[in-house]
Each structure stands twice: as C-alpha cells, then as structure tokens.
Amino acid sequence: MSMSQSYPSILLIEKNQQLAQKVSFDLTDAGYQVTVTADPEQGKSQFEQLQPSLVVIDQAQLGDQGLQLCRDIRGNNNPVLILLFMNQDGVRDRVACLEAGADDYTLLPYRTEKFLQLVRLYLQPSDEVPEQLYFSDLVLDLSHRCAYRNGRKIDLTVKEFELLKYLMSHPGEVLTREQILDQVWEHNHGGESNVIEVYIRYLRLKIEQGGNKRLIQTVRGVGYVLRDS
Image 1: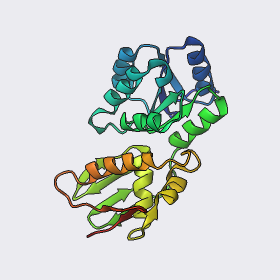
Image 2: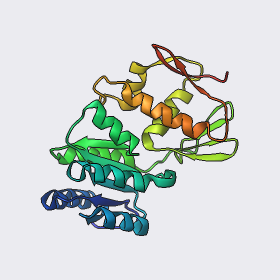
Image 3: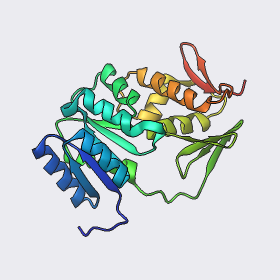
C-alpha cells in the first residue's frame, strides 16, 4: 500500500524484536506510518519529535517502566492516543492502565485483526458535522473530542470523552454502572465497575478545576447522574 502524509503516524515502543516486526508490518500494510523503538527513553524523545497520532506501548514487556512511560507521555494532559499491550486483564491491571493515562489496551498474545480493529476505531477520520452538547456551563465538542467550561478548554482521553458524552446525552437521568459499562466499554469490561470510578474521578478533577461546582453526581448503590444542583 502506498504511503502518504495524510495517513496517521504511530509510534510503537516494543522490546520484543519479533513482535515489533510483526506489528510494524501489519500497521504499515494497513496504511499507517510507523516508527519503532525498543528503548523507552528513546521513545519519549521520538514522541516529542514526531508528535504521532497514536502511541503503542508493550507494557507486558516493559512492566512498571511501560506505565511510567505512559504517564510521561500523558503529562500536561497531552491528548495523544495511547494503547497498551497487556498480559492480564484483572481489575488491578485495568486500573493501573487507566491511571497511567492509557486510552485502551489489548491483550497478548498478539492478534492482527483484533489489534487493527482497535487502531482503526481510534484513528478513523471524523466526517461529522461540527456538533456540541451543552449542560449548564459545560460544553462538549464532539468533532474535536474536548470539553469547555467557562471558556477553559478541557482535554480528554478517548474513554473520558465517551463517558462524558454518554452522561451529557442523558442529562438528569440516573445511569446505572451496568448501563455505562455496556455503552462506553461495550463488551470489553468483564462485568467490573471499578474502571468507571477511576474515570469519574479523573473527569471530576478536570471539570471541577478552578473551583467549579460538581455536575457529575453519585447515586449511591446505583450509578451516576449529570445534575446541576
């Protein structure tokens, strides 16, 4: 497939040479521009130089170093998309992934179609007409995947955006944890609601920055509601 500057660029940080070659080949064949490095420090400098659309980190190979790299890249609320390769899918693993700032993850062993499907999901071009959702003094820009409150821009990760979009699409309606998991995480949640609490906490920190009042309310034992009170 011919390459073009119009294709999204991807930075792959992978220590396993065989896997790096396979993933790089699959991404290049799918039309993406790929840069590969095995060294996390070099990965940080290349990220700053390239400013890619997506960063893929093999956390299974790098361990805590991979999570720290994710935090470093996510620093200052950088909106770049970050996907992790992970070995396990337990609640603790998911929370660690999310708290490090990753948008999503895929489990090893590596499967080409599953991985490319996830990449396409996040990097598909948006042909939507510019649209916004409003609630109180909060505005969600659907085209640029960010929010504004009192004129202040709020950068959101992909899952933060999807969660806030779901809440703002149902203002005043109490949404159960099960509904949120099904709509925002679809089938990839294993029935665990801990991930919701992590994202609600991060959304509140961002939305309430500067002393703004709370809009995302907890309904104990049920779920959450967007309410201006």
